Length: 78
Image (cartoon, rainbow, N blue to C red; front, side, top):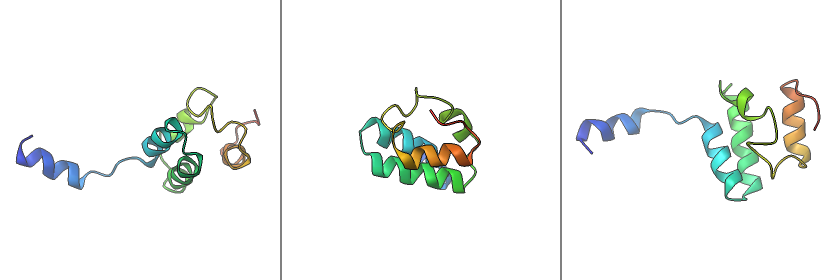
């Protein structure tokens, strides 16, 4: 990696929804929900696509906190 590439990585903010996907995939429900909340608070532009169905967060579908977040985004309950 060139020095300027490392500098860009340090200055670029990573969308919180990516961390939510990561922690959900690892089975860490609590951290996934924390990052989803952060993505919601930060108005992550990709969050709408990520929470539109079961495919992205299958282990969170039955979680009331996830359903409440979907409700705030005007999605119907699953």
